[in-house]
Image 1: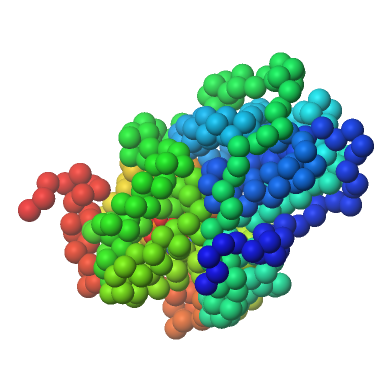
Image 2: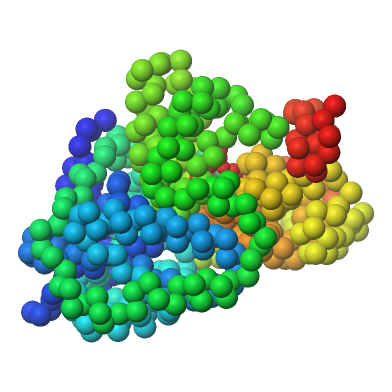
Length: 470
Ligand SMILES: Cc1cc2nc3c(=O)[nH]c(=O)nc-3n(C[C@H](O)[C@H](O)[C@H](O)COP(=O)(O)OP(=O)(O)OC[C@H]3O[C@@H](n4cnc5c(N)ncnc54)[C@H](O)[C@@H]3O)c2cc1C
C-alpha cells in the first residue's frame, strides 16, 4: 500500500473532454464541483489547483444549482446547500472563491466563462447520463480544455474495468488488483497564491435566487431531516469516526439486522460527496492496524463500499439504461415477460404504497422508516423493492414507482447505487436465475417468513409503525 498518492494515479483519474488548446487570454482555472462536495480528499480540486499553480493563475470553484430537477425533494436540496455553505467558508481560507450559479448548467457556465475566461475547466465525474451530457456540451461550447476527474470512486471507473461487468464476482478481482495503487491520501489543497480579481464577483448573481430556486422543489415532508442528518464535510468526518468507534466492531455480523440499525449510516455523505470512500477505507485500515480482530468487519465494509458501490458506477457508466428494464440481463427480461400476466393477489396504487397502506407490517414499517428518517435499512430495501414487483400491475409499473419513491424520499437517492439496487431487486441485475415462480419468474424471491426467521422483525415493525413495545 503506498503512503502518498503517486502523480500517475492522479493522472489516471483525469479524462479530457475536448481537444481545445489553452486560450492566450486564459485568466483562471475553474473547478465545476458536482458529485464531490468536499475540500479534503478531492482529486478534482487538486488537479485544478495543480493546473492553476503551473500556469500562475487564480483558481475558482463553481457549483451549478439546477432550478428544477423534479425527482428530488426540497429537503435534499437544503441538506446539500447547508454543506455547500460550509465549503464556501473552507475554500475562502484557501483564497479560493466559491461561485454558486443558478439555472441551466450549460448556459450559466457559458456566460460565466465569457467573464472569467478560464484557461481550463475541471468537472467531477458522474456516470449518470444528465451530467455527462451537460459536461460534454460545455466542453463543446467553451474555448478551453475541459477535463473530468473521477474522485468519487477509489479507482477511476475506466481503470477498474473497460466494460460492463456481469456482477460483483467479475469486478471483485479487478478491484483487488488495482486497489493497492489507489490506497493513498491525495496531497492536501494549498492556500492559493494567485488571487481572484475582486471585480469578477460583481458580474454574477452569486447566492441570489437560491431560495426561490429551492422553493420550487416539492417538499416530501421530512421536516426533521435537518436534525436527523446534519450536513457538511466536518459532520461527515464525525460520522465516519462514530462508525469506526461504535459500529465497525461486529459490522460483518450485525449489518443485516433491520432492528439493529448497525450499518455505517454513511450513504448520505457518500452520495453528496461530503465524504470520500477512499478516506473511509484508509480510516478503516488504520483501525484494523490497531486492532486486528476488526479484519472481518473491514472486509465486509470493503465488499459493500468498494466492490458493490463501484459496481454500480460500472453499470451506469457502461449502460445508459439504468432506469429501464432494458438494462436488465436477457434471461431476466425474458422471464419477467413470461410472467407479466400472472394473477396478483394484491395490487396497490402509488398513493397506497406511498402512505404505507399495504397488508404487510414489515413493508409498511420500511416505507415509513424511509419517509420519516430519510433512509431505509439496507436489508429492508431489497425486500421493499421485491414486494413492489409482486403488488403492481407489471414490472414496468413497479420500476416506475420504485424510482419515484426511492429518489423522492431517500436522502441518498438519485444515486447509481439506487438504480442498480432496484434493478437487482426486481430485474436480476448482477444476479443469477433462481427457481421459477409466479410473477417473479426466475428473479430471486424474498418473503415475510424469511424476515421473521432471521430477525426480530416485530421490533422493527413496532419502532416504525409507532406501536408500543412489549
Ligand atoms: C432497492 C434498493 C435501493 C437502494 N437505493 C440506494 C440509494 O438510493 N442510494 C444508495 O447510496 N444506496 C442505495 N442502495 C444500496 C444500499 O442499500 C445502501 O447503500 C445502504 O443501505 C446505505 O446505508 P449505509 O451507508 O448505512 O450502508 P452500509 O451497509 O454501511 O454500506 C456502506 C456503504 O457501502 C455502499 N453500499 C452498501 N450496500 C450497497 C449495495 N447493495 N450496492 C451498492 N453500494 C452499497 C454504500 O455506499 C454505503 O453507504 C439501495 C439498495 C436497494 C436494494
